[in-house]
Image 1 (cartoon, rainbow over the protein chains, first blue to last red):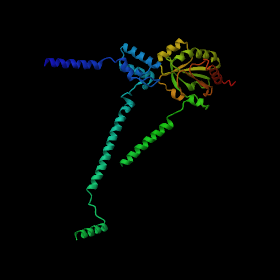
Image 2: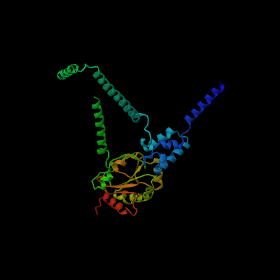
Image 3: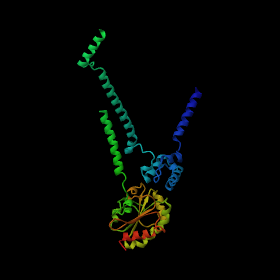
Image 4: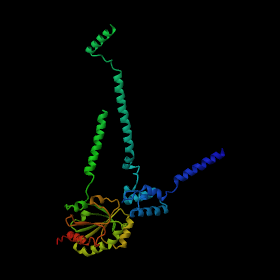
Length: 148
Length: 182
């Protein structure tokens, strides 16, 4: 039991440690965009991208956090340097709208399917079809001829 | 009901497509200038790098301008910096203003660049690149000439100024900005 508890504590400590570990330059380079070429920094060799990579390394070495470095680069180059839009303010819409459209689409499909199935159900439960009188007369005549 | 919703959705998407094709390819001033159209220098108001405060292009109306878009990380910008400074000093008495627009750059890098090359003409900071689309900037450096009425004159110079390729266009642009038609 003690061993199991110790193992759990060790795993928890490792997970917590991983979650709070300092970001690596390559993590940040994948999350930031070169303002001139439009690709992420890790994919770009443009002079400004190289300068931004150097800036990231310098700031990380100085102890700056990931959020700080991103905020500083947004201050210099605008929000366009973020590969993903921020999850706050107006930019939150960029995250919410796709889900809202998906939900609205699913609801729409469900409504249409429900309406169709209801219409078909109503058709099944309707009054039995009656034959045209002329056709009924001909069928009766044929039956009488067959029986005789 | 379902069909009406689907049709409305398709119509909306088509409308967006048409709008994108028709209106989202705004032509920059450089393209209009190249076609020979009469075009006014697109306005901007940006923070200054050479001193505190902001500078609006409109505040320079009435003065001939050489507007130079540059960045400290751009190699050819280093080559042309002394030429632009000399141009400013040479024509300053005639009212010519060289105006630098530092684009997509670190402010501190830009200030270091200005100190290194002894730049004393006004320079504004456009880190977000808000001027790029309206001016039609395609690379760095690029230089435009604006006359006293605010119209773009001469031709846009792409690349460092005053090298063999564009010395004539540079001199002609300055002359047109100053109002010398000869």
